[in-house]
Length: 71
Image (cartoon, rainbow, N blue to C red; front, side, top):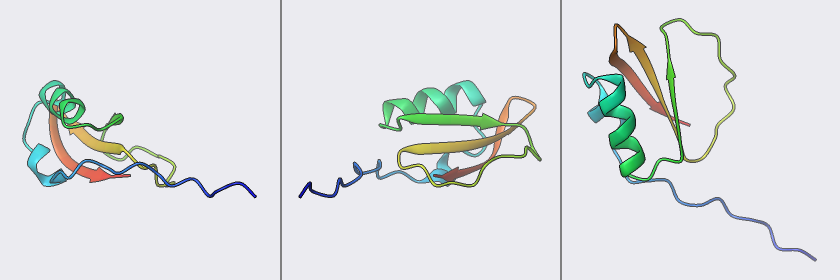
């Protein structure tokens, strides 16, 4: 019987630390800290709500990160 795969660990990072950064700086910093997927979204975007290990989401308005969450 095959073993059950375990997801890789996510970076130990504070999502709130990205709020206030420019979208470009936030993305670069997130990738340097080990996030495999970084998604920048405009406010009010309709998105799927599945949780994806290793993904960091930014709500970006006027080029600045207004909100950030994991998954």
